[in-house]
Amino acid sequence: MRGSVVVIIAFLSVVLALWDPHDEVRQRSHQGPLVHGRALPDEKSNETSRARELKYFNDQTDGMSFLVNGIGAPEVGFDIGESYAGSLPNTPSGNSTLFFWFFPSDNPRASDEIVVWLNGGPGCSSMIGLLQENGPFIWRPGTYAPVRNMYSWVNLTHMVWIDQPSGTGFSPGPPSVQDEMDVANQFNDFWKRFVDTFGLKNRKVYLTGESYAGQYIPYIADDVLNRNHTEYFNLKGVKSIAPVMSDEAVQAQVPVGMAVQRFQNVLGLNETFMEYLREKDETCGYAKFMDKALEFPPPGPMKALTPNAKNCNVWLDMMTAATYVNPCFNVYHVTASCPHLWDQMDANERSIGPGHYMNRTDVQQAIDMPPTNYKTCVEYSMFGPQGDPSPLSAFGPLPRVIKKTNNTILAQGLLDFRIFANGTLAAIQNMAWNGAQGFQGAPSKKLFVPYHHGLISTLQKTGPNPWDAGAGHLGTTHTERGLTFVTVDLAGHRKWRATDSKVLTARI
Image 1 (cartoon, one colour):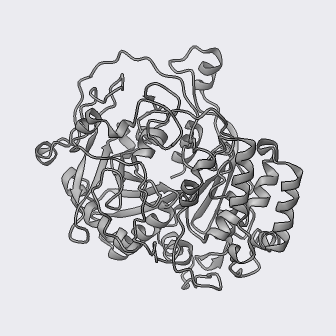
Image 2 (image 1 turned 90 degrees about the horizontal axis):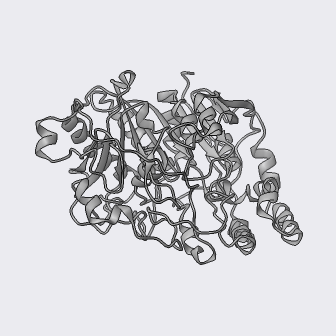
Image 3 (image 1 turned 60 degrees about the horizontal axis):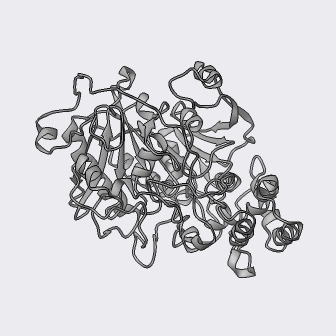
């Protein structure tokens, strides 16, 4: 790590308010629902509760009724293991509480660490991550019951999923944050109580999350690193998947033409629209911008673009055209198709099913929550009508966090059409950290996942689960000066499949 002071290279315009990657999708929901994952076959299990030593059951957790009955999770036909759920205050910086669900790991090598998971939004519950991405049990859209997650991150380390800021998920509102520093302060007030409650002092801490967590995480990390209170927050690394880190033009508008061209065989758009996109790439300056943005090393700072100035909102045009071809078009996972799958997290507005799992009375009782009108994502601004005024993380705390941790991972699924992989890479190329701007070499190293025994069971249908993670070359990886950029070929925005969880867990 170079010792010189890093000058952060920003766009030549000041970004005053941040963008919500899900807002335009919600506004366009009448054109197609958002289907976030593939169904996985159910696992049949007759397992009963087994005797175990509860590692984190103490006087405090007993008195606060945090212990979750491992064999009492509704609809789950197996023991989910030791876990604790509930709420702790975020005062004095906040005026309410934050909800958590903590799963200790049986891995002895994880005895001195803990990983935090935050979903984005802003205002989306981290129970999305727990129940449909990387938790110990998952309920995929279109399936009738939860199954074990063979590649849960809990297999490797202690995990806690947190609904934050206040007003998100099970954390009661109304929201009281005005900017990202409020988010960081309230999180840290909560975290100190969480550490004290479960006896977790001096643990190595890793912050992980997705989407708008690309804002949350760098600000929280920067705050705790500045406090230097390692007894409570010994931060050792951060990881953001599909991170909101730069302005919307760079991450969601400029790369549209390039991405559509690459996936035209999936999208099936007509030649008239393809020609329209090519013209917009030229007249809006997108093609020229991307040519410069993806030079290695970068030629210098890039000027900001204003898509709306020249009627250049090609992302919205692309979404409309794609939905005409595929009524179930999903910007979060571009290969999704009809029918709309019933989603227990209620993320798909047009799915038809029995209801919302986390809004069930028996589920809320199981995790010691009072009756709550739980929403997967809020339908209002977490930061008030003005939105989040904090600088985007690439122009603010992210370079400092990379420098101080030398262990920062930014990951991107190539099937994500809400935040494009080349948009995130362009944002990296316009950011300076550890003494230089951008990557000096182009990402090209193959991301290899070893072949494993489970694949044989899958092919021969002899294993306990007729599904498993893939193997082989599944993407690319590139590391320079403490920052790693990972792409996964068959991953989308939110619902990272078993393969992708296996890939990314191994990298932090």
